[in-house]
Amino acid sequence: MIYADLVVANLKQLVTCAGQAPKRGAGMKEVGLLEKAWVAGWQGEIVFVGTEKEFREKVSLIDRALLLDGTEQVALPGLVDAHTHLPFAGDRSQEFALRMQGYSYQQLAAMGLGIQTTVKATRGITKEELKILCRKRLQTMLLNGTTTLEAKSGYGLNLEDEIKQLEVLKELRSEQPVEIVSTFMGAHEVPPEYKNERRNYIRLLKERIMPEVKSRNLAEFFDIFCEPTVFNLEETEELARAALKLGYKLKIHADEFVPIGGTELAVELGARSAEHLINITPEGIEKLSQSETAAVLLPGVPFFLMLEKTAPARELLDRGAIVALATDFNPGSSYVFSLLFIMQLGVYTMKMTVEEAIQASTINAAYAIERETIVGSVEPGKQFDLLLCDIPSYPSLVYELGRNPITTVIKKGKVVVKESRPNF
Ligand code: NIG
Ligand code: FE
Image 1: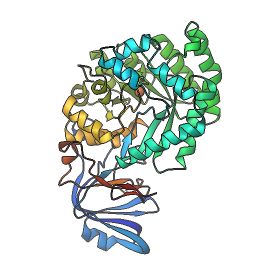
Image 2 (image 1 turned 120 degrees about the vertical axis):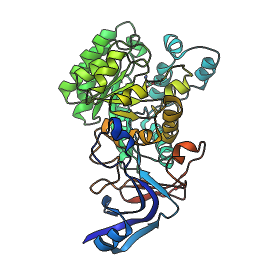
Image 3 (image 1 turned 45 degrees about the vertical axis):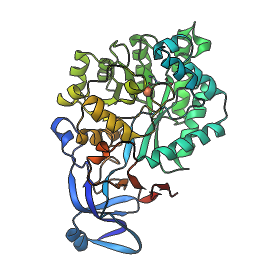
Image 4 (image 1 turned 90 degrees about the vertical axis):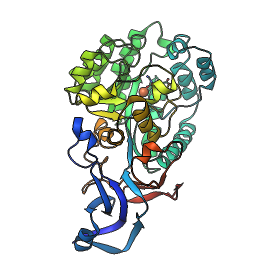
C-alpha cells in the first residue's frame, strides 16, 4: 500500500511533462496529458499519479491527509525559472524613459548607465533591505506559478556586495517556499573603479572573489556576460576555465547582441546552458543542437527592448536542441516576473507550440539548472510541486492573456498559494 498525506483528486486535465529528460525535438510536443487524473503525495514527494480506480486500489490516506478537489481544474508542474537577476536594488525608470526617446540598451551602457546604475543602488543598501526586496519579488513570482528559480548575483562586482547578494539568496531559501539555485555572476560587467584596469578586475575575480564564494558554498553556477563590450571571448574563456577548476558549473550569457562565439565556447566547455542567443550564428545553432548544453531563451528581452529580432527558437527546436524558457527577471532588459507571460511570448513571438512552451518552462528549465531529477514533471519520485489553474483546458495557459489563472500552488507537498493568495 502507498501512504499519502496529500491528494489532488479528479483533475480535469493533468499535464505531467513526464518521461525522459531533457526533452528534444518531437519529445517536446509530448506533454504526457492525463484526464480525470489523481495525484498523491507523501512528505513532499509524489508517490502516485493515475486514475481513480488505480488510486482506490493502491493508495491509502492517512488520518490528517489533505484532499483537494481538481474537478474544475487543470494542473501542471510548478514552473521553473532558470534565469533571473533577482537580487538588485533601485529602478531604472529614468533609463526606460531614455529608451523611449530612442537610446538603445547598449548606448545607455556606454554612457555609464545600465548595469552600472543598478550596481550603485545595490551597493548602497544593506543585506536586510535587499532581502526585503527579494522576498516580495519571490512572493509575486510564486503567485504566478514559479516554484523553483535560479538567481544570479552580479550587481555588487566586489567581494562584499557580491557576497551580500548571495547571502540574501541563501537566507531566503529557508524563509519562503520558492526553491532558489544560486549563480555567482561577478563577471556581469567590469565595475566602474576598474574601467581602465580590466585585467586587474579579472585577476580579482579569479584569485579572490571566485574562490571565496566557492569556499563559502554560496553558489553552484558561474555565469559570464560574453559580449564584445563586456567580457570578450578570450576573457570569457579564461574566466570560465577558472570557474570550472574551482568546481563551479557553467552558464554563459551568449550572443545576446553581438555573436562572438559565446555559444560555441559554452558547448566546448560543457556548460550546462547558453542563454539569450538572439544573435546566435548558424554554426552556433548547429553546435548547440548536437550538444547537451541547454539553450535558455529569454523572449522577455527582445520584447522589453523592442528589438526586431528574437532567438531562433523554431530552428533550435526543429534541430533537436534542449530548449528552455526563462524570464531573465532584471531591471534593465526584462522586468518580467511571470513565466506564464514568457511562455506566451514564446508562442506568440517565437512560434513555439503551447506544448513546447510548457516543457521549456518546466522539465527543460529544470535541466538547465541541473534539477531535472527532482522537479519539472509530475511523476512518482519527484518533488510534489503542482499548479492548479482555473481554465477549461491547458492551451488556455497561452490562449487567455492578461489573467493569472493559477488558483493553487503546491510546493514540496504544501499548499503555499490558496485561492490565488499566499498561504505560508
Ligand atoms: O541578462 N545581459 C546581461 N544581463 C542582463 C541585464 C542586466 C541589466 O540590464 O541590469 C540580461 O539581459
Ligand atoms: Fe541575464
